Amino acid sequence: MKRLQQLHLRRNEARKMNHQEVVEEDRKKKLPANWEAKQRRVEWEQQDDEVRKAAEAKGEDFERVKMLSMTADEAERLERKKKKRNPDQGFADFAQAQQRQYSRLTKQLKPDMSEYKKQKDELGEAFTPSVDNLSYGGEGKVSEAGIDRMVADLEKQAEKRAKFSRRRAHYDDADIDYINERNMKFNKKLARFYDPFTAEIKQNLERGTAV
Image (cartoon, rainbow, N blue to C red):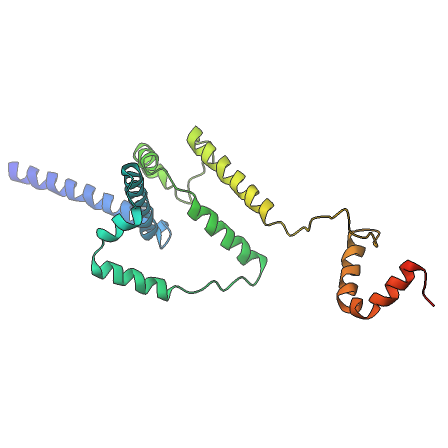
């Protein structure tokens, strides 16, 4: 009876472990295909950032420290990766442009991995809800540091847009030969093509000596 009881306990334990493995496998299937690669990338960037800060605190050149700790194989692989990287092919429509901008902006935001792990431990399975989960929003409070990070990024975007504005400056000393902005652009197009041939006629009209 004692041995039978031990077998029952081992069977229950195996059943429990099997259930945990099934739940974990189901959770991984619901994650994006490149989830693990992204996690490794984020962890690598965090370690790289910590090494950079430590080097700056000591007054050392980070790139030099990084190259000294890199093996020849890693350096060769990094060089091959740089050569293999495809050049920017631009975009075909506005949907692709928005996707490119989203990818670029999300790469700039550095996540707080300690806070991420803390929330993951606290929420457990609720951290990665399934499609059957009806709760949406309001599950947690955004930290002040996260809000400040988002505001700083938005201000940076606004500053960058202001620098690269395509609107041309207005010069007060320029001749006013237009009635609105659209007419101004039209006149500039005409000037590019016809000014070499009509410059003398225009000067005669301004002087009042045109025949």
